[in-house]
Image 1 (cartoon, rainbow, N blue to C red):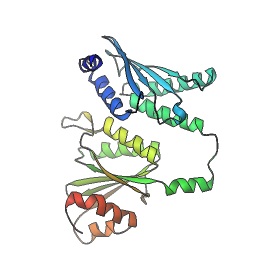
Image 2 (image 1 turned 90 degrees about the horizontal axis):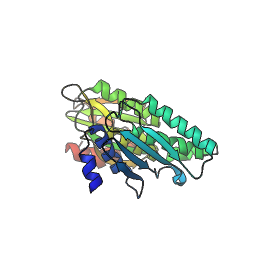
Image 3 (image 1 turned 180 degrees about the vertical axis):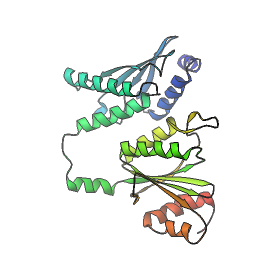
Image 4 (image 1 turned 120 degrees about the vertical axis):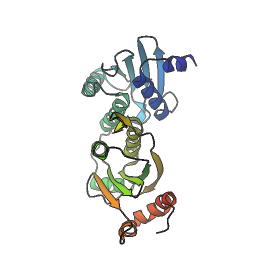
Length: 269
């Protein structure tokens, strides 16, 4: 209770928002802790369970007065890595933090750490058969967006995330509804959703960068979309057979429409 009171009383909304997001996302036992807090700094302990074998602990110290203008102090610990390996990892994550200086960075650094450590842990080169098997187990997540104020900024940000996470998506506009379908490996889809909920993706009414507060995940199906690019944009309307033709063009789209889209728009097409 005392820690919660101190967090809420901090005069740094960026740190408060980031702690709340990390607490919600890293919610397994001992995965995220606020280790200490005073009037000058806050120390976080992060033990991401997405890393195979729970390999790494990341210690983060944030300066309450200057973060995110100042980079966080970072330290990596692991009983399974050699001193040389730890030094390399420590150097790399600090370089990544330097690139992100000026932004709210901790969640992005955790995502980077998970990707790096899981690649490092994987010693075998995937075969064509294993890659084919992975493709069979890709999924598509369906999201409803309440509104988009700056479509240029929104699409640019989503496209950047999708490239980094090896995802493909389709952004659909129909009347007043906006739906986003995203395909890829399950872990990467989870990472994308964390970003979409916690990082700036649009602008508010006065032009300031803002987070997506009205995102609703409608569901997920097994299989991937036949997206042409990283993020395809589709605008549908009621003229001709535009709407019904699109949803009947692929079996996965028929399933998505029946389970998730139709209940939202209240139509039988």
